[in-house]
Length: 353
Length: 106
Image 1 (cartoon, each protein chain N blue to C red):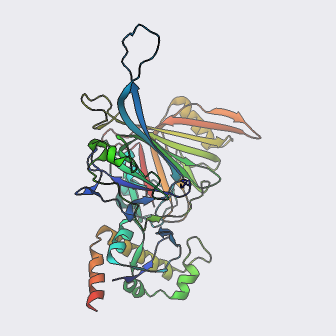
Image 2: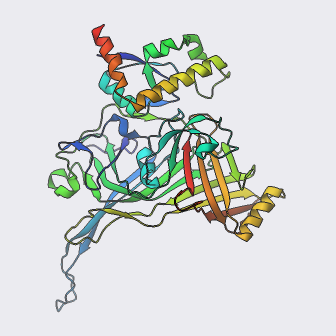
Protein backbone atom coordinates (compact mmCIF):
# COMPACT_ATOMS: atom_id res chain seq x y z
CA UNK A 1 0.00 0.00 0.00
CA UNK A 2 1.19 3.48 -0.76
CA UNK A 3 0.09 6.80 0.64
CA UNK A 4 -0.25 9.92 -1.48
CA UNK A 5 2.23 12.46 -0.16
CA UNK A 6 0.79 15.90 -0.65
CA UNK A 7 3.98 17.43 -2.06
CA UNK A 8 4.29 14.79 -4.77
CA UNK A 9 1.74 16.36 -7.06
CA UNK A 10 1.89 18.26 -10.34
CA UNK A 11 -0.78 19.90 -12.43
CA UNK A 12 -0.99 20.38 -16.19
CA UNK A 13 -3.33 22.75 -17.98
CA UNK A 14 -4.60 22.55 -21.56
CA UNK A 15 -7.10 24.68 -23.44
CA UNK A 16 -10.01 22.62 -24.77
CA UNK A 17 -11.36 23.63 -28.15
CA UNK A 18 -14.66 21.95 -27.28
CA UNK A 19 -16.31 21.69 -23.85
CA UNK A 20 -16.79 17.95 -23.99
CA UNK A 21 -13.51 16.93 -25.59
CA UNK A 22 -10.11 16.75 -23.94
CA UNK A 23 -7.23 17.41 -26.37
CA UNK A 24 -6.35 14.04 -27.86
CA UNK A 25 -4.98 12.29 -30.90
CA UNK A 26 -7.26 9.38 -31.85
CA UNK A 27 -8.14 8.83 -28.22
CA UNK A 28 -4.67 9.33 -26.74
CA UNK A 29 -4.35 12.38 -24.51
CA UNK A 30 -1.93 14.99 -25.79
CA UNK A 31 -1.09 16.40 -22.37
CA UNK A 32 2.65 16.96 -22.40
CA UNK A 33 5.67 18.39 -20.67
CA UNK A 34 4.87 21.89 -21.89
CA UNK A 35 1.52 21.98 -20.05
CA UNK A 36 2.97 21.82 -16.54
CA UNK A 37 2.34 24.60 -14.04
CA UNK A 38 3.62 24.99 -10.48
CA UNK A 39 1.03 25.55 -7.78
CA UNK A 40 0.51 25.45 -4.03
CA UNK A 41 -2.81 23.71 -3.61
CA UNK A 42 -5.39 22.25 -5.97
CA UNK A 43 -8.74 20.59 -5.55
CA UNK A 44 -10.83 18.60 -8.01
CA UNK A 45 -14.13 17.29 -6.71
CA UNK A 46 -17.08 15.46 -8.16
CA UNK A 47 -20.46 16.60 -6.95
CA UNK A 48 -23.02 13.84 -7.21
CA UNK A 49 -26.52 14.72 -6.08
CA UNK A 50 -28.44 11.68 -4.82
CA UNK A 51 -32.12 11.59 -5.64
CA UNK A 52 -34.85 9.59 -4.00
CA UNK A 53 -38.39 8.89 -5.04
CA UNK A 54 -40.38 11.45 -3.01
CA UNK A 55 -43.69 9.57 -2.89
CA UNK A 56 -45.20 8.56 0.39
CA UNK A 57 -44.74 4.94 1.38
CA UNK A 58 -47.02 4.75 4.39
CA UNK A 59 -44.08 4.55 6.76
CA UNK A 60 -41.63 7.15 8.04
CA UNK A 61 -38.60 5.23 6.84
CA UNK A 62 -36.50 6.57 4.02
CA UNK A 63 -36.24 4.63 0.78
CA UNK A 64 -32.98 4.11 -1.00
CA UNK A 65 -32.26 6.60 -3.75
CA UNK A 66 -30.20 6.69 -6.90
CA UNK A 67 -27.70 8.84 -8.71
CA UNK A 68 -28.84 12.28 -9.74
CA UNK A 69 -27.23 14.95 -11.87
CA UNK A 70 -23.51 15.36 -11.43
CA UNK A 71 -20.83 17.92 -12.18
CA UNK A 72 -17.42 18.87 -10.83
CA UNK A 73 -15.60 21.72 -9.18
CA UNK A 74 -11.99 22.81 -9.21
CA UNK A 75 -9.78 25.30 -7.43
CA UNK A 76 -6.13 26.20 -7.40
CA UNK A 77 -3.84 28.47 -5.44
CA UNK A 78 -0.46 29.38 -6.85
CA UNK A 79 2.29 31.96 -6.77
CA UNK A 80 1.75 34.82 -9.15
CA UNK A 81 4.58 33.69 -11.38
CA UNK A 82 5.51 35.34 -14.64
CA UNK A 83 7.73 33.41 -17.03
CA UNK A 84 10.88 35.24 -16.04
CA UNK A 85 11.43 36.52 -19.56
CA UNK A 86 9.31 39.45 -20.68
CA UNK A 87 6.95 38.80 -23.55
CA UNK A 88 6.47 35.10 -22.80
CA UNK A 89 3.19 33.78 -21.43
CA UNK A 90 3.07 32.42 -17.90
CA UNK A 91 2.57 28.73 -17.16
CA UNK A 92 -0.90 29.51 -15.82
CA UNK A 93 -1.93 30.82 -19.25
CA UNK A 94 -4.88 28.43 -19.78
CA UNK A 95 -6.54 29.58 -16.55
CA UNK A 96 -5.97 33.24 -17.36
CA UNK A 97 -7.26 32.75 -20.91
CA UNK A 98 -10.38 31.12 -19.53
CA UNK A 99 -10.93 33.92 -17.00
CA UNK A 100 -10.28 36.69 -19.52
CA UNK A 101 -12.27 35.00 -22.27
CA UNK A 102 -9.48 35.51 -24.78
CA UNK A 103 -5.94 34.40 -25.49
CA UNK A 104 -3.15 36.77 -24.54
CA UNK A 105 -0.78 38.27 -27.07
CA UNK A 106 2.86 39.19 -27.36
CA UNK A 107 3.16 42.96 -27.59
CA UNK A 108 5.21 45.86 -26.26
CA UNK A 109 4.64 47.97 -23.19
CA UNK A 110 3.88 51.31 -24.80
CA UNK A 111 1.23 53.94 -24.21
CA UNK A 112 -0.04 53.29 -27.71
CA UNK A 113 -0.81 49.72 -26.70
CA UNK A 114 -2.61 50.89 -23.60
CA UNK A 115 0.22 50.34 -21.14
CA UNK A 116 -0.22 52.65 -18.14
CA UNK A 117 2.34 55.35 -17.36
CA UNK A 118 4.45 55.66 -14.26
CA UNK A 119 5.06 51.95 -13.76
CA UNK A 120 8.83 52.11 -14.10
CA UNK A 121 8.75 49.56 -16.92
CA UNK A 122 11.03 50.55 -19.80
CA UNK A 123 8.96 52.02 -22.64
CA UNK A 124 8.75 49.50 -25.46
CA UNK A 125 9.69 46.50 -23.33
CA UNK A 126 8.44 43.12 -24.51
CA UNK A 127 5.16 42.21 -22.85
CA UNK A 128 2.45 39.57 -22.79
CA UNK A 129 -0.97 41.18 -22.53
CA UNK A 130 -4.40 39.82 -21.60
CA UNK A 131 -7.48 41.81 -22.53
CA UNK A 132 -10.99 40.87 -21.45
CA UNK A 133 -13.44 39.36 -23.88
CA UNK A 134 -16.67 37.44 -23.62
CA UNK A 135 -15.80 34.02 -25.06
CA UNK A 136 -16.19 30.81 -23.09
CA UNK A 137 -12.84 29.00 -23.07
CA UNK A 138 -12.89 25.69 -21.21
CA UNK A 139 -9.69 23.98 -20.17
CA UNK A 140 -8.52 20.57 -19.03
CA UNK A 141 -7.05 20.45 -15.53
CA UNK A 142 -4.78 17.42 -15.04
CA UNK A 143 -3.66 16.48 -11.56
CA UNK A 144 -0.99 13.76 -11.34
CA UNK A 145 0.21 12.39 -8.04
CA UNK A 146 2.81 9.83 -6.97
CA UNK A 147 3.08 6.93 -6.97
CA UNK A 148 1.23 6.46 -10.23
CA UNK A 149 -1.04 3.85 -8.64
CA UNK A 150 -2.66 6.63 -6.64
CA UNK A 151 -5.73 8.02 -8.35
CA UNK A 152 -4.80 10.47 -11.11
CA UNK A 153 -7.47 13.03 -11.95
CA UNK A 154 -8.66 15.26 -14.75
CA UNK A 155 -11.14 18.11 -14.56
CA UNK A 156 -12.94 18.07 -17.91
CA UNK A 157 -14.40 21.28 -19.32
CA UNK A 158 -13.24 23.58 -16.54
CA UNK A 159 -14.67 27.11 -16.56
CA UNK A 160 -13.82 29.82 -14.04
CA UNK A 161 -16.15 31.31 -11.47
CA UNK A 162 -13.56 33.68 -10.10
CA UNK A 163 -9.88 34.52 -9.99
CA UNK A 164 -8.15 36.70 -7.42
CA UNK A 165 -4.77 38.40 -7.51
CA UNK A 166 -3.31 39.24 -4.10
CA UNK A 167 -0.58 41.79 -3.44
CA UNK A 168 1.14 42.87 -0.28
CA UNK A 169 1.95 39.55 1.33
CA UNK A 170 5.18 39.10 3.23
CA UNK A 171 5.92 36.06 1.04
CA UNK A 172 5.28 35.49 -2.63
CA UNK A 173 2.45 37.19 -4.49
CA UNK A 174 -0.34 34.73 -4.97
CA UNK A 175 -3.35 34.13 -7.13
CA UNK A 176 -6.31 31.85 -6.61
CA UNK A 177 -8.91 30.60 -9.05
CA UNK A 178 -11.93 28.36 -8.83
CA UNK A 179 -14.80 27.19 -10.91
CA UNK A 180 -16.88 24.32 -12.18
CA UNK A 181 -16.36 21.55 -14.69
CA UNK A 182 -18.25 18.79 -16.44
CA UNK A 183 -16.81 16.29 -13.99
CA UNK A 184 -13.59 14.85 -12.63
CA UNK A 185 -12.28 11.86 -14.55
CA UNK A 186 -10.37 9.39 -12.41
CA UNK A 187 -7.66 6.99 -13.55
CA UNK A 188 -8.79 4.32 -11.11
CA UNK A 189 -12.44 4.63 -12.18
CA UNK A 190 -11.74 5.12 -15.88
CA UNK A 191 -13.00 1.76 -17.14
CA UNK A 192 -16.36 2.20 -15.42
CA UNK A 193 -16.78 5.84 -16.41
CA UNK A 194 -19.32 6.91 -19.01
CA UNK A 195 -18.14 7.99 -22.45
CA UNK A 196 -19.21 11.59 -21.89
CA UNK A 197 -16.77 12.11 -19.03
CA UNK A 198 -14.03 10.21 -20.85
CA UNK A 199 -14.26 13.17 -23.21
CA UNK A 200 -12.72 11.44 -26.21
CA UNK A 201 -10.00 9.52 -24.36
CA UNK A 202 -9.50 5.79 -24.72
CA UNK A 203 -7.19 5.54 -21.71
CA UNK A 204 -6.01 7.68 -18.83
CA UNK A 205 -2.45 8.81 -19.66
CA UNK A 206 0.62 8.55 -17.49
CA UNK A 207 2.23 11.75 -16.32
CA UNK A 208 4.63 13.36 -18.80
CA UNK A 209 8.22 12.53 -17.93
CA UNK A 210 9.91 15.93 -18.15
CA UNK A 211 7.52 18.67 -17.01
CA UNK A 212 8.62 22.19 -17.94
CA UNK A 213 7.85 24.99 -15.50
CA UNK A 214 9.04 28.58 -15.47
CA UNK A 215 9.47 31.63 -13.34
CA UNK A 216 10.99 32.69 -10.09
CA UNK A 217 9.79 34.23 -6.88
CA UNK A 218 7.98 37.57 -6.99
CA UNK A 219 7.84 39.04 -3.47
CA UNK A 220 4.33 40.17 -2.64
CA UNK A 221 5.46 43.41 -1.04
CA UNK A 222 7.68 44.69 -3.86
CA UNK A 223 6.31 46.89 -6.61
CA UNK A 224 4.29 50.01 -7.06
CA UNK A 225 0.68 51.18 -6.71
CA UNK A 226 -0.64 54.06 -8.78
CA UNK A 227 -4.10 54.99 -7.60
CA UNK A 228 -6.06 57.85 -9.11
CA UNK A 229 -2.95 58.92 -11.01
CA UNK A 230 -0.64 59.14 -8.00
CA UNK A 231 1.85 56.63 -6.70
CA UNK A 232 0.58 55.69 -3.26
CA UNK A 233 3.50 55.10 -0.96
CA UNK A 234 1.32 53.99 1.92
CA UNK A 235 -0.32 50.96 0.33
CA UNK A 236 -0.45 47.95 2.65
CA UNK A 237 -2.16 45.36 0.52
CA UNK A 238 -4.49 45.01 -2.42
CA UNK A 239 -6.51 42.43 -4.25
CA UNK A 240 -8.27 42.28 -7.57
CA UNK A 241 -11.04 39.76 -8.00
CA UNK A 242 -12.54 38.84 -11.33
CA UNK A 243 -15.94 37.24 -10.90
CA UNK A 244 -15.82 35.64 -14.30
CA UNK A 245 -19.36 34.31 -14.24
CA UNK A 246 -18.40 30.96 -15.72
CA UNK A 247 -20.57 27.99 -14.89
CA UNK A 248 -21.57 24.66 -16.37
CA UNK A 249 -25.11 24.12 -17.59
CA UNK A 250 -26.71 21.69 -15.16
CA UNK A 251 -30.26 21.39 -16.40
CA UNK A 252 -30.10 19.98 -19.92
CA UNK A 253 -32.78 17.34 -20.42
CA UNK A 254 -31.44 13.92 -21.22
CA UNK A 255 -28.05 14.24 -19.53
CA UNK A 256 -26.70 13.46 -16.09
CA UNK A 257 -23.71 15.68 -16.75
CA UNK A 258 -23.34 19.22 -18.09
CA UNK A 259 -22.97 19.31 -21.86
CA UNK A 260 -21.94 22.93 -22.13
CA UNK A 261 -20.83 26.01 -20.21
CA UNK A 262 -22.25 29.51 -19.95
CA UNK A 263 -21.24 32.88 -18.57
CA UNK A 264 -22.95 35.66 -16.68
CA UNK A 265 -21.96 39.28 -16.14
CA UNK A 266 -18.31 39.80 -15.31
CA UNK A 267 -17.46 41.86 -12.24
CA UNK A 268 -13.95 43.12 -11.54
CA UNK A 269 -13.58 44.18 -7.92
CA UNK A 270 -10.68 46.05 -6.46
CA UNK A 271 -9.84 46.29 -2.75
CA UNK A 272 -6.90 48.09 -1.23
CA UNK A 273 -5.78 49.23 2.17
CA UNK A 274 -3.67 52.32 2.87
CA UNK A 275 -2.26 54.04 5.88
CA UNK A 276 -4.29 57.22 6.25
CA UNK A 277 -2.26 60.40 5.95
CA UNK A 278 -2.77 64.07 5.23
CA UNK A 279 -1.41 64.14 1.70
CA UNK A 280 -3.32 65.64 -1.19
CA UNK A 281 -3.38 62.19 -2.81
CA UNK A 282 -5.30 60.65 0.08
CA UNK A 283 -7.66 63.60 0.42
CA UNK A 284 -8.38 63.52 -3.32
CA UNK A 285 -8.92 59.77 -3.21
CA UNK A 286 -11.46 60.07 -0.42
CA UNK A 287 -13.20 62.89 -2.28
CA UNK A 288 -13.46 60.63 -5.33
CA UNK A 289 -15.01 57.94 -3.17
CA UNK A 290 -17.55 60.32 -1.68
CA UNK A 291 -18.47 61.69 -5.11
CA UNK A 292 -18.39 58.24 -6.73
CA UNK A 293 -15.95 59.58 -9.29
CA UNK A 294 -14.36 56.75 -11.23
CA UNK A 295 -10.62 56.32 -10.78
CA UNK A 296 -7.96 54.08 -12.34
CA UNK A 297 -5.77 51.77 -10.30
CA UNK A 298 -2.49 50.31 -11.46
CA UNK A 299 -0.57 47.70 -9.47
CA UNK A 300 2.93 46.73 -10.45
CA UNK A 301 4.02 43.55 -8.77
CA UNK A 302 7.76 42.89 -8.81
CA UNK A 303 10.68 44.96 -9.99
CA UNK A 304 12.76 42.59 -12.14
CA UNK A 305 12.03 42.74 -15.89
CA UNK A 306 10.46 39.48 -16.98
CA UNK A 307 9.08 38.92 -13.51
CA UNK A 308 6.71 41.84 -13.27
CA UNK A 309 2.94 41.77 -13.38
CA UNK A 310 0.92 44.91 -14.05
CA UNK A 311 -2.78 44.94 -13.27
CA UNK A 312 -4.61 47.96 -14.67
CA UNK A 313 -8.19 48.58 -13.53
CA UNK A 314 -10.21 51.33 -15.13
CA UNK A 315 -13.29 53.15 -13.96
CA UNK A 316 -13.17 51.99 -10.36
CA UNK A 317 -15.90 53.55 -8.24
CA UNK A 318 -14.65 53.02 -4.71
CA UNK A 319 -16.85 53.20 -1.65
CA UNK A 320 -16.14 55.57 1.21
CA UNK A 321 -13.17 54.17 3.12
CA UNK A 322 -13.54 52.01 6.17
CA UNK A 323 -11.14 53.14 8.84
CA UNK A 324 -9.57 50.89 11.36
CA UNK A 325 -6.94 51.61 13.95
CA UNK A 326 -3.88 49.71 14.87
CA UNK A 327 -0.94 51.88 15.84
CA UNK A 328 -1.89 54.09 12.88
CA UNK A 329 -5.25 54.61 11.27
CA UNK A 330 -5.74 52.61 8.12
CA UNK A 331 -8.31 53.12 5.39
CA UNK A 332 -9.69 50.32 3.24
CA UNK A 333 -11.26 51.09 -0.10
CA UNK A 334 -13.20 48.76 -2.34
CA UNK A 335 -15.10 49.18 -5.54
CA UNK A 336 -15.94 47.72 -8.90
CA UNK A 337 -14.25 48.59 -12.18
CA UNK A 338 -16.06 49.51 -15.37
CA UNK A 339 -14.97 49.60 -19.00
CA UNK A 340 -14.20 52.88 -20.78
CA UNK A 341 -16.60 51.72 -23.48
CA UNK A 342 -18.53 48.47 -23.63
CA UNK A 343 -16.73 47.48 -26.82
CA UNK A 344 -13.28 47.91 -25.25
CA UNK A 345 -13.99 45.74 -22.17
CA UNK A 346 -10.98 47.39 -20.57
CA UNK A 347 -12.07 47.35 -16.93
CA UNK A 348 -9.04 45.16 -16.34
CA UNK A 349 -5.92 44.59 -18.40
CA UNK A 350 -3.20 42.23 -17.28
CA UNK A 351 0.40 42.57 -18.42
CA UNK A 352 3.37 40.30 -17.88
CA UNK A 353 6.48 42.39 -18.50
CA UNK B 1 20.00 12.98 -31.60
CA UNK B 2 20.58 15.42 -28.76
CA UNK B 3 21.83 18.94 -29.39
CA UNK B 4 23.31 21.59 -27.13
CA UNK B 5 21.16 24.41 -25.86
CA UNK B 6 21.73 27.34 -23.51
CA UNK B 7 19.33 28.70 -20.94
CA UNK B 8 18.71 32.42 -21.41
CA UNK B 9 15.77 32.92 -19.05
CA UNK B 10 15.36 33.61 -15.35
CA UNK B 11 14.45 30.28 -13.80
CA UNK B 12 12.86 27.08 -15.00
CA UNK B 13 12.61 23.41 -14.20
CA UNK B 14 12.67 20.57 -16.71
CA UNK B 15 11.95 17.14 -15.36
CA UNK B 16 13.01 18.30 -11.93
CA UNK B 17 16.31 19.84 -13.00
CA UNK B 18 16.60 23.53 -12.17
CA UNK B 19 18.02 26.09 -14.57
CA UNK B 20 18.57 29.41 -12.85
CA UNK B 21 21.59 31.02 -14.48
CA UNK B 22 21.88 32.63 -17.86
CA UNK B 23 24.06 30.54 -20.13
CA UNK B 24 23.56 27.17 -18.41
CA UNK B 25 24.05 24.28 -20.82
CA UNK B 26 21.47 21.62 -21.59
CA UNK B 27 21.08 18.86 -24.12
CA UNK B 28 17.72 18.03 -25.70
CA UNK B 29 16.55 15.84 -28.50
CA UNK B 30 14.17 17.52 -30.94
CA UNK B 31 11.04 16.26 -29.21
CA UNK B 32 12.08 17.50 -25.80
CA UNK B 33 13.40 20.76 -27.26
CA UNK B 34 9.97 21.38 -28.74
CA UNK B 35 8.33 20.64 -25.39
CA UNK B 36 10.78 22.91 -23.62
CA UNK B 37 10.20 25.87 -25.94
CA UNK B 38 6.45 25.25 -26.14
CA UNK B 39 6.41 25.18 -22.37
CA UNK B 40 7.86 28.68 -22.25
CA UNK B 41 11.37 27.78 -21.13
CA UNK B 42 13.85 30.18 -22.72
CA UNK B 43 16.54 28.10 -24.36
CA UNK B 44 18.35 28.83 -27.60
CA UNK B 45 20.67 26.65 -29.68
CA UNK B 46 24.26 26.71 -28.53
CA UNK B 47 25.35 28.11 -31.89
CA UNK B 48 23.02 31.09 -31.50
CA UNK B 49 24.31 31.65 -27.99
CA UNK B 50 27.96 31.55 -29.04
CA UNK B 51 27.25 34.02 -31.84
CA UNK B 52 26.26 36.60 -29.22
CA UNK B 53 29.85 36.66 -27.94
CA UNK B 54 29.03 36.22 -24.27
CA UNK B 55 32.04 34.97 -22.35
CA UNK B 56 31.64 32.20 -19.80
CA UNK B 57 33.12 34.52 -17.19
CA UNK B 58 30.46 37.16 -17.84
CA UNK B 59 27.70 34.55 -17.80
CA UNK B 60 28.97 33.32 -14.44
CA UNK B 61 29.25 36.81 -13.06
CA UNK B 62 26.03 38.37 -14.29
CA UNK B 63 23.89 35.35 -15.07
CA UNK B 64 21.72 35.32 -11.96
CA UNK B 65 18.63 37.51 -12.15
CA UNK B 66 18.64 40.35 -9.68
CA UNK B 67 22.22 39.57 -8.72
CA UNK B 68 25.04 41.99 -8.17
CA UNK B 69 26.94 43.65 -9.66
CA UNK B 70 24.67 45.10 -12.31
CA UNK B 71 25.71 43.76 -15.70
CA UNK B 72 27.24 46.16 -18.22
CA UNK B 73 25.19 47.35 -21.17
CA UNK B 74 26.93 44.98 -23.57
CA UNK B 75 25.80 42.00 -21.50
CA UNK B 76 22.27 43.37 -21.18
CA UNK B 77 22.09 43.85 -24.93
CA UNK B 78 23.28 40.30 -25.53
CA UNK B 79 20.78 38.96 -23.01
CA UNK B 80 17.95 40.85 -24.70
CA UNK B 81 19.02 39.49 -28.08
CA UNK B 82 19.15 35.95 -26.69
CA UNK B 83 15.67 36.28 -25.21
CA UNK B 84 14.33 37.74 -28.44
CA UNK B 85 15.71 34.69 -30.23
CA UNK B 86 14.00 32.42 -27.69
CA UNK B 87 10.68 34.20 -28.27
CA UNK B 88 11.19 33.79 -32.01
CA UNK B 89 11.71 30.05 -31.59
CA UNK B 90 8.64 29.79 -29.36
CA UNK B 91 6.49 31.50 -31.96
CA UNK B 92 7.65 29.09 -34.67
CA UNK B 93 8.76 25.84 -33.12
CA UNK B 94 9.58 24.37 -36.53
CA UNK B 95 12.70 26.56 -36.57
CA UNK B 96 14.25 23.96 -34.29
CA UNK B 97 14.09 21.37 -37.07
CA UNK B 98 16.84 23.09 -39.02
CA UNK B 99 19.15 23.06 -36.02
CA UNK B 100 18.63 19.35 -35.43
CA UNK B 101 18.66 18.47 -39.13
CA UNK B 102 21.99 20.24 -39.53
CA UNK B 103 23.38 18.21 -36.67
CA UNK B 104 22.32 14.96 -38.24
CA UNK B 105 23.94 15.90 -41.55
CA UNK B 106 27.14 16.83 -39.76
